[in-house]
Length: 170
Image (cartoon, rainbow, N blue to C red; front, side, top):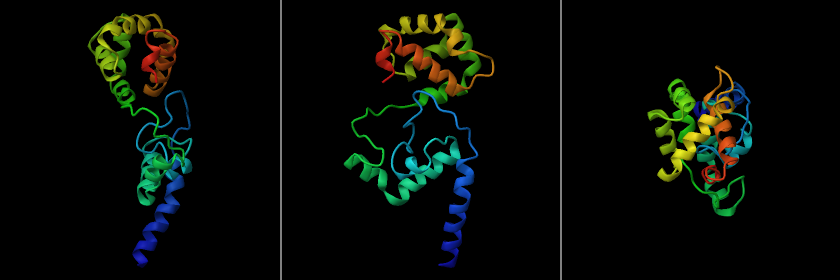
């Protein structure tokens, strides 16, 4: 019993340190990504990002089962009416930044085609997607040191302003 109390106490002490050791940047499309998007974990760690904060949020949710309750009752920041979407675009962009920047600047390429596939863009809308990212390349990649999340956030803003592509930003 004493060991359990020490472990719980240690987790309570280290939790805020891990949660605040991340960058506190926000942008469109980042809310609700991952399994930590609702429940007490999301409420406790709101505004934090990074692996540590997400692990603590998911652990909090799993420990108390409150995201399941929240989804069924519409409480705890949960909304079961939202469409479930795979948010792998952020991961894909982060893993392919250099090649994706090259492809976007040309408006064609294998990496750009892969991103359109991951984002669920229909085959008939891909030419419009390629043209829009080429046209707005400087907005999507405003500087050399841009992050994957910044690229995705800018891409979503650009897509929202296009009548053909706005349906994919949901």
